[in-house]
Image 1: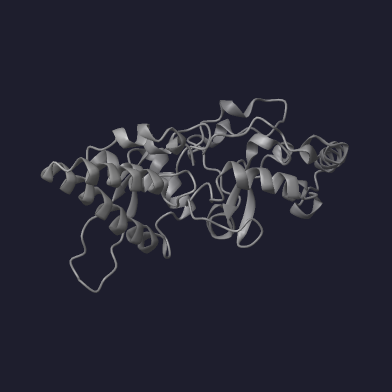
Image 2: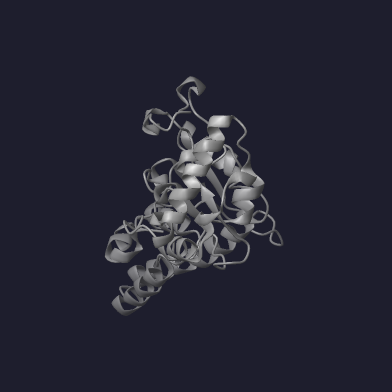
Amino acid sequence: MIRIRRSPDVPTTLASTKVDSARREIESIVASGNLCSTDFQSHWNAPDVRKALYEMQHHKCCYCERTRDEKRESDIDHFRPKALYWWLAYVWNNLFFTCRACNQEHKKDKFPLRDEATRVTDPRIDPSRESYLLLHPCEDDPEEFLRWEWGACLEPRSPQLVLLDHREERGRVTVVTLGLNDGELPIERGRIAVRFEALITKYRAGEYLGNETLKATAVHEILREIAPSQEFLGLRRAMLRNAGLGWIIETGSDSTAS
């Protein structure tokens, strides 16, 4: 995960009369006490909403940072699940582009709190009173809560694995809830780490040899590898900081958001 800059421009569909009508209909069903998931009209999945999120997130899942096609193997996630917070079903700030695995296999309708007694169930109450545990891709800086574990493989034929670790409880809950060390993710990140480590070594070689051209070339290649569209950008940035090359991140001003 890495922090995302949300566009302030609300997609047309979410500000439309049809969404107002759908919201009123849901409110009426809630009053009757019979709300179910099929009662929601999926206006959050309208082409303009999906495209806006897709572009805002540089074509990547907001949780695992994998690149996904705009319409295949992807979902639109409600950060606060609509099953629990029905009045936020069509709210722009509650929507994110995700891969299907993160949304359907892991997050689902989960939204853990430090204290369940603080959970907001009334739309008239500000949900910010809740002390939620999942890291918010826009409101939190995940790099302050998460850390990466990587290293050389002991077995030559084994792939390098890169695991996502945590600095405190919210980081731990996020990793576990979203399955951020499950499946092929550690291996996919390992491939990136091996390639990225080679670029760092290239820069170090330029330093050792006093070769400014080699150093400049390495920096240019590293900047290309930490562009916002790159997968696992959080890992790449952590590797640079660990190598004492965090200044390169600042050099590429466009590489500060997912």
